[in-house]
Image (cartoon, helix red, strand yellow):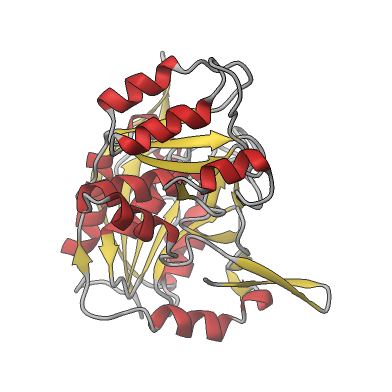
Length: 354
C-alpha cells in the first residue's frame, strides 16, 4: 500500500464561517476526519505547514510547501497539497520549478466550498487527489472536479462553480470518476509517463531561490509610456500581456510602447511578451507590430499561462544574470510547461512537446 503525505496550507477547503466571513481555521487532522474511507486506498499521514487564505500566498510560503515535500521525500510515495484556489495555479507552477528531478507525484487540490459545508466539493476533490498521488507518475498536478491537470497549465477560470479549473493549451492528463482514474488517450499515457521519466538525471534537488523584482503589465488602448520608465528603474523583469497574438503599439510619441520596451532591454531588464488571450499563445511573426518585437531580444512566452510564466521568470532571475540565459531557460520547455506544436491526426489534436 502506498504512503501518501497530505500537506495542509489553509484555503477555502479548511475554512469556517466567522463574523467577518470565511477564514481558514482547520488543521490537517480535521480535514482527514471528513474522508475516513480513504484509509482503504493508502497509508495516509498529514502535516499542517500553514493556515492561510491563498490570497495571502507568497513565494516564501511556496518555498515552505516545496521544502516540506523535500524533507519528507524519502518516506512517502506521493504528496497532496490542500491549498486555496485563488493562487493554486501559481503555487503548483512554483513548486514545479523548485523541485528538480522530481520522481513522485505532488498533487494540489482544494475546493470552492469548505469541507464542513453540506454541499461541499472538498471531499471528492481531496479523495481524488489522494488517489492520483498513488499513481506511478512524476511531476506536479492539480486535481479538481474530476480532472487532472499539468501543474504548469492549470488556471482558475470560475469564481464559484465546482469546475473552477481548466487545462490551458495542454490536454487534461486524466479524468477521475467514482474513484477510477482514466488517462487521456490523446496523451498516450504509457508514452507520456516514459517521456517524463527520461528527464530524471539524479536525486531530488530543492532549489527555492526566487526573485520577486518583476512586474506584470497588461496592455490597453491608450496606455501611457511613463510606467516603463518606472519599471526600468525598479524591476529586473517584466511580463507584458500584449494584444492578441503578440501586438505591441509602435506608433506615435505617447503610444510607442515598442520603443520603451527597447529601452528596457538596453537597461538589462528581462522583457517577456505574452498575450491577454487564454488560448493558443503568441506568434510575433504574424503581424508587423509583432515583428518589431521579434527583432528585439524579447523573451517569448509561447503558450504558457501567465501563472506559470510569472513563477518561471522569478526562478530564472534568481539563477541567471545574463538576459540570454534567462531567455533560453524560459523559452525551453520544462515539464511540458510550453506545449507546443499541434498536429491533427484523424480529427484529433495531438500535442507534441518541443
